[in-house]
Image (tube, rainbow, N blue to C red; front, side, top):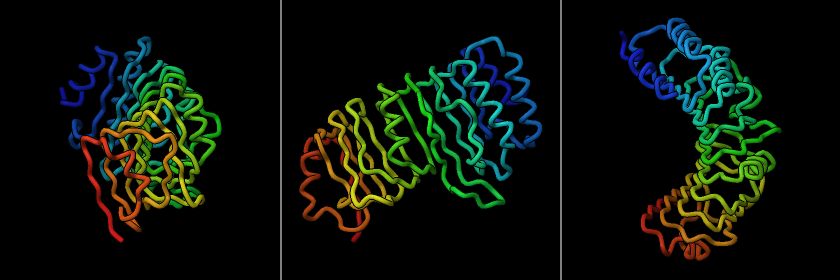
Length: 256
């Protein structure tokens, strides 16, 4: 039995499916897809706690297979959906992800689609979002606009962790009393400044933004911060002093 078989079957007994390309050696994509199909078919009457798929070889998975597997996870009341892919066509979003009532932890990290150019290079969030159980959200290579993010926060009242990585951000305001950890990594376009209103925030990571573009309202008392800024650095940015003064872990980087 291959190591991938052992790992997936061990996880299956705990309602966890963990599929990592490193566990499947030199398997071809077609063989891997058949294996996953058979694995899901064998446990079709059991609810699923965690579905984790990490795939990063040079040959991409078939988008239709990925959509089918994620639809299976959603239909089986998945709580943790963790999908990291290399070369995925993000214009074809798997159905049901953003309206899954059972989902507590969503991690979608998909790099660019191969071979063709698309209207949007990053993942574009849908208009309809309702994730009432969501507590943690991680998105990579995503285009984030005001209304979809507001919808995430408004319809996910327990959202405590929000991580936007390698993303294009068009936001004027991030507002949440529940938010505890926030990561913003990428570039901002559109508004001149972004206001953060999250009084219970304890962790803040920011990469690629100028401090001049961030305004704090209802200042939190951060316990940890990692800030790698562009443009003007920390000279004269007194509005950051209040949120950083009690930080136990602090990393500051920047260049003018």
